[in-house]
Length: 258
Image (cartoon, rainbow, N blue to C red; front, top):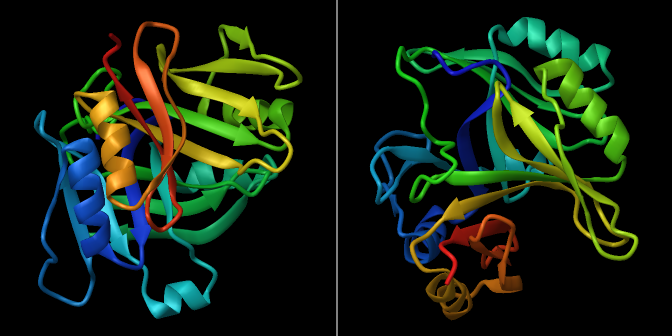
């Protein structure tokens, strides 16, 4: 896996109903979530209209749900060495949700959380090809990674320490929302961090590119989801929506501006 340390390499939807999730996201984003594979594990790859894959859909088993797992989007951050990174995460105040493990021909990974309890994976992939799940303008790919957290300064310090992220610029948001701080990883702007407002959900939110933001917003509502914000223009000329799927999972869609 040639992807640089600290860069996003995979996106994963945890859901109790992969068939319903396929129907929803295929329509909203323009993906093709693969049919259920044979075997006990229900894990389906997400193919994009622009070519390549952006991630996977995993069915939450009753055992996973009993253990506290909930429907959500997660991402995998590529690292040079999983075990070394996990040790650094715990030393920096993070935690381990699932110890490091290997999947043959896929790679080594661990499910961890930052000091504010926000989960994500770290992974060293086995493939000799670079992941293109994250592409700044790639159709169907993740174009933006956004963290809302209870402790903005501490979260930024944690990700800088563990992954080498830097924060070269920021944008002051209205009212008492504070700063929207842009994240640079391995020389590329990959997203931003911000302080979650009172009563607002915390966690990582991922924005996936669709060809028509108005159509995406209409489809979210038609397919049983909710549009919480937008369509609205963002710096750079794109337009976005913030939405949740029929299972209440938050995500974003980004599309070309007018």
